[in-house]
Amino acid sequence: MTDMIDMANMPKGALHGIKVLDLSRVLAGPSCTQVLADLGAEVIKVERPHIGDETRHWAPPTFSDDTSAYYATINRNKKSLTVDITTPTGQDIIKQLIAESDILVENFKVGGLKKYGLDYDSLKQDNPRLIYASLTGFGQTGPDAARPGYDYIIQGLSGLMSITGPSDGEPHKVGVAVVDLFAGLQLTIGIQAALLARHRTGLGQHVDVALLDSALAMLANVGMNHLASDKIPPRLGNQHPNIVPYQVFAGEGEQHFILACGNDSQFAKLCEVLAVDWHTDERFATNPQRVANRELLCGALSKKFSEQPRTYWLEVLDQAGIPCGAIHNVAEALAMPQAQARNMIVNFTEQGSPVRALGNPIKLSASPVSYRTPPPQLSEHTDSTLADLGYDSEMIAKLKADGVV
Image (cartoon, rainbow, N blue to C red):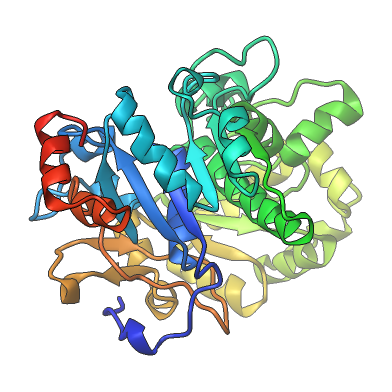
């Protein structure tokens, strides 16, 4: 676990000087803007007055300052500005911010911001350098564009659930909202590509990322298996569709571990460890043969592995250079010395916040990510943001009285 470091003496982030207006909420969009913020961008998160992002209320659990763990997952390094964008005055505030922003991120339904004059076609007239990033369930085009998108439903529609779970059980979703998070990463990549393109052309553009598209891309080799064979990929539980043995096994006492033999050489080493000659058996000598005889081989391996505890197998397999690993619970995973050494848990205690957060996995040598501020309290930066736009205290007080901010 890492303590906060002196950011004044740290190099500037890779996106220092980039200003982001974040109109997104919940998980997918905010996960993107947190990456941008970690990389040094200034991110102003626009929330609804008095209510804020829905995830502020997705609790328990919370930290001791009542910040929900869910909200804290993807909202550090941001400023919180509350504005009612359904009002003309609120729309004017947003447009003032857009005039000086590089990027706008939104996850409203397709066309949802047009009625407020906050759609891309309207805004690019005044700020042609604006990169307008939209994240929706189904994208800006196509017959389903108007449909709302939810990670769970997209996991089902995309085929991901059809290949996840036990072969003899019902389809399973992944334990976290992977489609939301993957789409957020795709949006981040699209935004950074648009920034590079703007450096050449001087013009911004519309970045359009959909949950469904992202989930379909996640099918990867399994999707390609279908395109190559026209066969519907089966649900294989913890087995790999193209590699054997590459799955979960149990040691003595039903202690589970993962074995991942990726090639024939590793399988031969495995046979040496097990004191068997299966690698010379024509049924198992090559990976295609092992895939064809999966049940026979894996049944024999299961019997062998049941003879010793998991700790024994992990030690001897690791010594032989055979890929393997324990199946950790979340506490065990975060307590790994490797996770600690890589600063994958971040404390905000030095800034007076009880929040602990998962760290950013991006490690840059010259312009590292930074953890400058904890997730903001609702409306924490409304007054200062409006003051930066030229509003005096009386004007701000009137906006509050009118319910605009």
